[in-house]
Length: 442
Picture 1 (cartoon, rainbow, N blue to C red):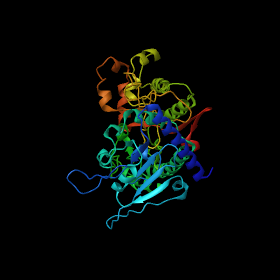
Picture 2: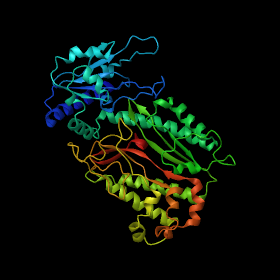
Picture 3: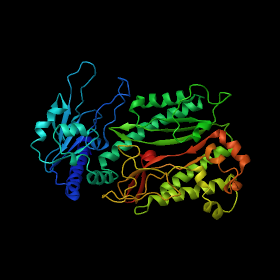
Picture 4: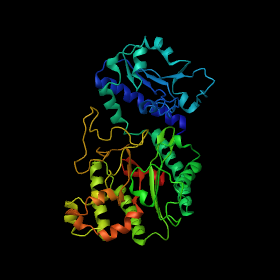
């Protein structure tokens, strides 16, 4: 299908979903106005915070700009209220590509407030967006500002991707892989974290603010910091030769995100760590093969811990029987995060812990509090599979004198702490036949 046909079908499906949501929630509203958001400055400053539009707005329109609006009225072609101020300080032009613009009734205004007279004839309107003061100013009933029942319905539905959305996610994966290849080369050339980060951005032809999240570029021991945010400009290793790179970096295409992690080693990296990386790559692919429609995502997370336990035993990092080690939950010391999360317009997409459209939650079990996805696996979902194995001093040190600590090979741990850790992450689409790995076959 052409981009225009894919997008038009996406809008048709979205319109049907919104019409069902309005009826199901019983709000008695006649329309829904989605607001992209407003710009804001840093505190006590006149510098603007990089803008990111509201996710439900971006579900309709690939325009990441402030003060834009979509009006959905059941039975009508959706409206795009395009706000283009007269301004000589900043570029305000909004590109109107035919492949998406033809799906809307487009009306252009110089000020957002100009929509007030148009909305007055549309009856009861629900408002979705952060800027509720604007909603109040244009006459929308405060009781219909971000109604929870409507948001619950829409958040839950966002997990099921249309063919248009899948194509954007595939493209975001392809672009990010270009960056990952460049980053790996920079690492092998002994680049520092800043060099590797810049290599990724340059290969993808993006600004840092255009990334879906702050790239994690961690050399050696910093790979044990799950959301490591810095970019060291000096050599990470005292001798100038790095041993491990963990890079977690993605791209956005039409505001749809990829989220990919790779762990690389050098020829001089200790053999045991290189063996651990190979074992983790095998485990990650085995977990993807276990994706079955109707299976709880939690089952995959548990399987990841079982696999981590086996890998630790095989490398003599922990000692004891498998049953004993699992009963002690020793793998949680080495894998403290969840196996993955829903992915889409947001990197950690909404609705991951909802068990229905009414907003009821299915929290993760107490032993796995960081798990972001507790949904049952269903066709159309896109999520990440990202098992990790880390040597985190703050977690390990707590166990040095504990009962669990007696099961750990501390001599080997001391050798592994300077190498940080491992994470392998792909983005997966669920189909009726199983999983399609968008990262490796997109």
